[in-house]
Amino acid sequence: MRFLLDTNVLIKLHPDSAESIEPGAATAARLSQLLGSGGHHAFAHPAVSFDIDRTVDEARRDLNRFRVSTYPRLPNPPSSAAIATALGNPVEGSNDWVDMQLIASVQAGAVQYLVTEDFGLLRRMRRVSLERGGLRIAEAVDLLESLFDHDVRPPPVVTATSMYSLDWSDPIWETFRGEYRDFDKWFDKARGDGRPSWYIQGSSGYSGICIAKAEDDRPHGLDGRILKVCSFKVADEARGSKYGELLLKTVLRYASENRRNLLYVEVLPRHGDLIEFLEDFGFAISSGHSTSRGELVLVKTLVPEATVAASLSEFEFHRKYGPPAIHPNARIFVVPIRAKFHRMLFPDEQVGLERRRARVRLPLDVPPLSRAFGNAIKKAYLSNGPIRSLEPGDILAFYRSEDHQAVTTVGVVEDTFVGKDPVGISAFVGPRTVYSFEEVESMSRQRAVLAILFRHDRSVEPMELGAMMSRGALRGAPQSITRVRKEGLDWMRSQLIA
View 1 (tube, rainbow, N blue to C red):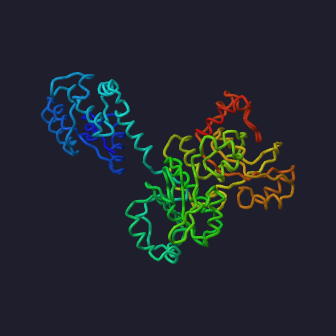
View 2: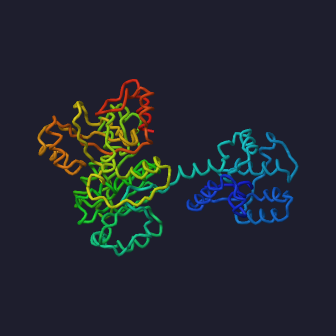
View 3: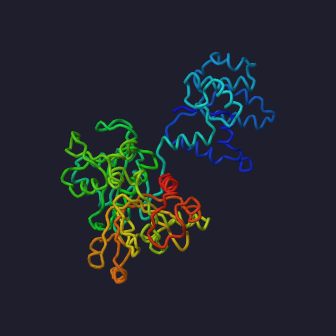
């Protein structure tokens, strides 16, 4: 994309000293980063030299000339004659005349956007119906961040990096080398692209690895903003750790926050376990499409059409499109959870919650998780409360009691089981629960236990108890699983899905 930078923007981008840094300089610096990393073209118009010549202070005039010289001049700038009828014929070299030259560049299509902090200039653009081509610095940053991928903080234990920083000699690559004859050649070529990558460090190398690539063409007839999962593997010694779910959660979060609408992966048919794993999370084999190496193409749609919800059950909607994805008609239940169990069950949310609560920058270092449920998308919750009527697809809004007294996390019910046999309960939830067998035994002695299998959908900005009560969602602090009241249902749903 092509951007034209006004003089006031160039000055913000290049302060001459720490004392002269203007408000908004950090946003301007972010704009400079995005322009450079995205391969965009930023120009200064030759006419801005008239603005600079009007600077009285000689030293500042020379400095501004240098600032402008660091950007290429817009070649062959168009005439402003086409907009003269609407904006007049100011004296050549005047401030109004310079504005007209900048506007004419947008009107003629020489650039897509003019970035300026001059409100008068933006008003003139509205007069000739070019308001969409005029952006303030913050608006230009928002545009670039919405159109192009940006880094997303991964869950604890997962490290985000670029492909060129991965250890090529790690043992985890040996499987790829055995299956793909030209793997080393591909790796050497692809790593220069700086593809987003994530790894889980084990004691003797990578325990898990994932590499993604933004696709700009139409691979396998797919259309839209597409993300390809190029490599996805968990080391044999890390089986049972739920690292596969942890890496999938990471790449789904990345795709969602970067507004990708399709995700796909190519898998050799002999990897039945991987295919089954991906299908369980909404990937589907693309009929009629395979690679020259005989790989199956599995595709996951991330953005459903508006009419799809009516044809799918609440849970199937989530499985096919999420996480995150919540059926618009799903029931909502608030689930109280003690801070101790919240930290164990949702460790990837802990740092953000503590930072908000303490209002300080806390360290991000989190020790490797020793129990699989912390890594998993598929988790379990046990309740001794009176509610027994949960159904697949119901929304669980986890209310962290004791300290935060707010809903922080969203889950979607997958299945339920009610019983008093601790062995049967433990067999049903498997390694997905924070409760030990002794704790399950203790709960089952009191009354029948409701065991809930659910999928972690997303984190939300904390919804405090007072807000939920004032909106009619709850009457008071939930003591057990509580269905959201009809009066506050629409508000609650809007907060969870936002």
